[in-house]
Image 1 (cartoon, rainbow, N blue to C red):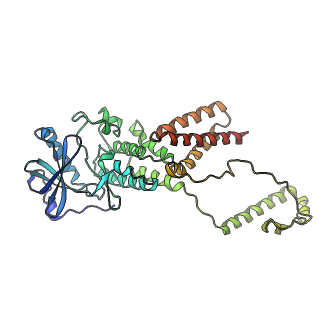
Image 2: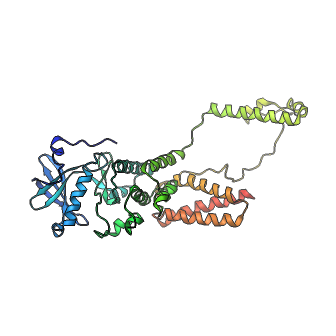
Image 3: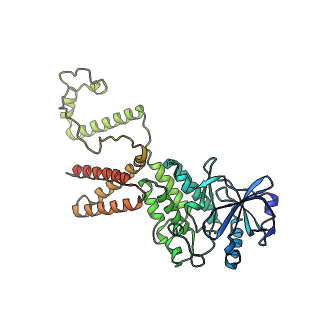
Length: 398
C-alpha cells in the first residue's frame, strides 16, 4: 500500500498546540459517542472536522484525548488510514482534528451489497496492511469495528478511522464496541498490544460471513489468551493468503496425465515381474496393450483378458458435486476445508469409535460457533453436507 503525502501547508499544522482556522459550508454528520463529525469546505477541498459534542467540550480528559489521537495519528502516513491533517481551533466548534474526507460508506453498509468472499478477503488484507503500518510505529488502534472501517466508493479501498486513546474505564464503551474488543481490554487486565487489534480483526471476519475455509484463522485470532493469537500481522497475512491459495488445485494437462499413466504402468509391470518372474512374462504375450489406448467401441480380441463391469458405487473418490449458488455460494469454499478437517478426525480416531464420535461432535460445535452469522437455511445446508460426508466416511471404514 502506498503512503499518503502531506503538503507543505499540512506539515506546518503538526504542532501540539491547535492553530486558529475557519472553513465554509459546515454540515454535521450524525455520530455516536462523545465526538461530533463536521463535513465542511477548505477552499476547493472537502474535509472533515472531528470535535467534541457540545456537552463534552469542557471535559479536560476528552480534550486531551483529541490531542493525543492527533499526535499519534499524524505519524501514520498510510493510504489505508484516514489522514490527520492538523489540530485546529474553530469558532463554534472549539478544538478539532482536521481529517481528509472519504467519499464512501462504512463496512456495515458495504456488507449489505452482497460482495463475494474474494472481495471480502481483499478488504481484510487492506485492513491488515493498515494495521501493520500502525503496529510498526508502536500504535494500536484499539477500536476496530465495522463503523470505524470506511470503504471508498471508487475502487473499494479501506480507510481506518477513530483510533482509541481512552480506556473503557475512562469512557464507557457501547455494546457495538465491546463486541469487537479483546477480553483484556474489556476488563483492563492488560495493556493493549498488537494482538488486541488481531482479536478484533478475527471478529470482523466472522461478521463478514467468511466461510469455514478461514475458521482456523478466525479461531486463532479470537483466542481468549493473547499468547494463543497471531503474534503479529505478518503471521496473520501469511496464513490468510496461504489458506486462500491452498484451496485451488493445479490443472493438469492431457500430456501430463498420459505420462503419469505410463510411468505408473511401467512401475506396476516391474513389480509384478519381480514378484512372479516367468509366469507373468508368459501371460504378457497374450495381452493386446494397444487396446488400453483405443476407444471402448473397438471389439477386443479373443485373447484379451475380460473383466466384469458393475455400476459405480457412491464413494468419496468418485462423488461429484455441483457448485452452490446464491445464498449457499459460501459452501463452495466451506466444503473443501470441512472435508479436509473430517478426514483428519477419521484418520486419527478410526480405531476408537467412542473417541471418533466425541471428536466429530466437538468439531461440529466449533464449526457452528465460528459460523454464527448463518441464517436457518444456511445452517441446514451445512448440517446436510456435514451429515452426508460423515455417513460416507463411516461407510468407507466398513
